[in-house]
Image (tube, rainbow, N blue to C red; front, side, top):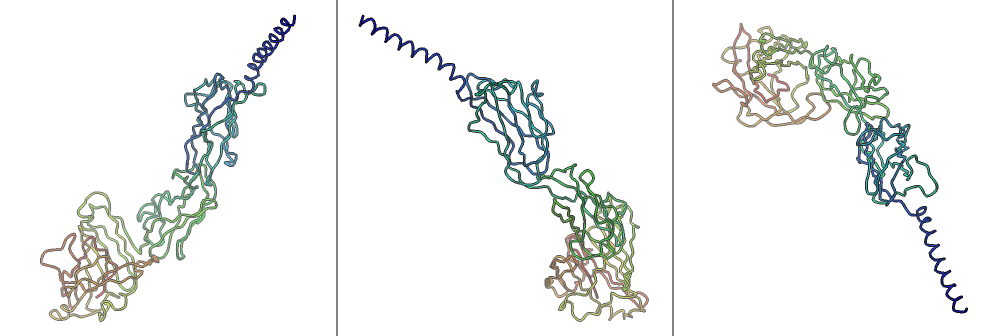
Length: 452
């Protein structure tokens, strides 16, 4: 009996171990980790725009199927989901999205497989690093007993980096205008498109839903008139009555709460101007500056191009040459003296007419002594054969120092100068006791002033 009892004990022990193994199999199904990965892209993204994010869930478990998940956008964004769908089509039956969460149901992601949900959401204007939320379960309806949850493992990435905030942009830049006329997006055209400022995201795309008020001012100086603050409508502020009464060089600065400020391109306010068809040789603009009458005429503009239009702008830059340059000359550009500025093909001609009542010239003496002192943007050969010296001063009144080359003009060669030639004195002619002086400034020289 002793031997039999001993065997029975051994048998019971073996059965006990076996039973434990059977029970343990059922218990492991409730406690075995069910891994998955979750990754969101793209990153980084520009702030302020509506972005489509790809949120990918991959089932790393075996043999369990990942049935459902909740995906939550970063709470700090303070925005609601605009749309959500799978990359392969609509959300599965029973799925939905509302507020900041996509409720994914009946996913049926098999072991080793993945699915991607596309989430459209507006990114905040404030840059930074933001974290998404996700919870996944084995059950298709996001329910089930304890232990039904999947566990997120590496490599996963739930972070979206937002770079660059929302900003203002001049959608329509201010262009040249005549003093007192409406500044628009077209040169010298008061009826042109209005100046517009819009809001863009970090990628430079317009934000149609942007709200607030945009104000404009001059970057420096005073004198801007019109309605200087306009609301954003559809993300755009429209300024249709801006003007400046004094000629000069200007820039606008637009600003709005939450969006910072932006500076426009530079533009010129002229004392007179015209847009001339390149086929019209009689287009004229005239301005009496008080000390002289200036008339600009189109002849063959734009290097002979007969298509489109050419701008003529007359601006009284004022002032004399900087001290030490062209010393000793009498300034004959004054009352009674007419300047006829004629933009030609690649050359600007200036005809200076000085009547006898202003100054009487002797044909063989006074005329020969007449000189023109020119200031321009490029060096040129002066009357004495040397290169024109340079100086810096704010010749256009924009607040920045400009380099200008100044000196007496040489006589023109026998051939008429064309594009690329140096500025020169073309002729001196006696007219009824007075005189006419013609000088030429070829492109790309840009004359800033002259006197004689």
